[in-house]
View: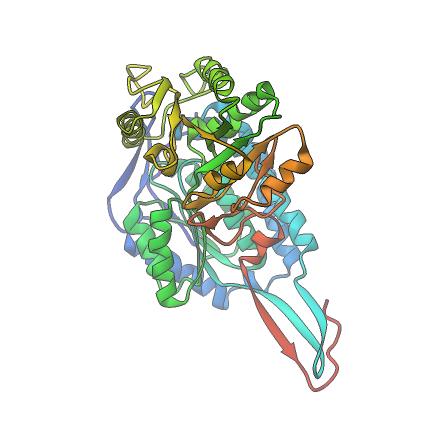
Amino acid sequence: MRPLDYDRLFIGGRWHKPATAQRISVISPHTEEQIGQTPHAGPEDVERAVRCARTAFDDGPWPRMSVADRMAKIDKLAALYSAQTDEMADLITAEMGSPRSFSRLGQATGAVAQMHLGLATAREFPWAERRPGLFGDVHIRRAPVGVVGAIVPWNVPQFLIMPKMIPALIAGCTVVLKPAPETPLDAMWLAEMLEEVDLPEGVVSIVPGGRETGEALVRHPGVDKISFTGSSATGRHIAALCGAQLKRVSLELGGKSAAIILDDADIAHTVKHLKTASLLNNGQACVAQTRILVSERRHDEVVDALSEMMSGLQVGDPADESTDIGPLVAQRQQQRVQGYIRAGIDEGARMVLGGTDKPHERGWYVQPTLFAEATNDMRIAREEIFGPVLTVLTYTDEHDAVRIANDSDYGLAGSVWTSDVAHGLQIAEQIRTGTYGINMYTLDTTAPFGGFKQSGIGREFGAEGLAEYVELQTTVSAQKLPDLT
């Protein structure tokens, strides 16, 4: 594996000595041993990064280049990245324990796909348009929003960097990116690729750090927009800070998605696909289908099928291609998930399999755990666990299933499983959630993604995701305007 120690920060497209000697040590969740280090960016480093981004946006060439010229830089980045996806996947697996099969297809290769999809979206995007107005033609231009602070979580770090950084750059924004302290190494390697692309000075900075670093970025008056993915609690705090400054903000937050299994569903097909839809990335996915809703008539059949599937999961070294469930990202996450398992038992749910005993002596592993006979007021049914824990809930009829699915603070994802797709669409229309699947749940990154309720504000992916990084400027004239479309 490539060297994993960095002693400088990537600020404004150049490598600079950090303002402090504070370091981030990255610990393998599988071996519990250190695999690398990066500087910890402090408020002074954030100040420098924002100042570089501000100058680059206000006075530099990047926002003034044509969209096509900016896209050419992204195309070059995609080519560089494509040659290194396997190595990037290995790095992500080492950093945060994601099974290598998912790190490769769902993260590294997915990051490249996001670049290409971003470019395809930009080619069709209405950067300028003419409309008839009250006093003649109106010209509408989509201008870059400005300096963007992008804050990404640790669970799918590269995949979640791209729907922020790529559309922002294509739009003409400058970007200060803050990766999570658990996963700074992949972001620093991305910085090396960005250096090869030779962007104008100041266009991209990468400032790894924790809460203090993120707070400095959000509060900075030189930042025009914050794009954040993470917990709903942190999202509420960020929204309040941005609201005080009337700063643009988009938030992709938590989820507690319900999979409604109708009586006419093929149970074997359903459970086969829930293996991924509910447990991908060791259960550390905001869209995971963790509340399994089934009728009283088919309850036992579904519980038995889920139990058989989960008991057969391979739990172990995430670098092994046969592994289904790797370790959780950190010891605190392991302890948090174990706490939820204890809460489920204490509140009266029946633990079908799993538990709090560690499956391996070393590493931050949690046994895949299944609860039945739960109610929707229990913590395991209401709170985002972010681990390999599923909860089966029973409904009386379809109206009751819809009620339970909607009885949540969240509204990010969901699914319905049925032999009648048209009826599944009718169910989908009753669920208050941003994305939905019928007989599947897989994120389609050509389409807008985001949540209702406490699952966030705004959308990522597709034209709607690109629109998050532009402002609308309307121009009218007493004389006929030239055709600028």
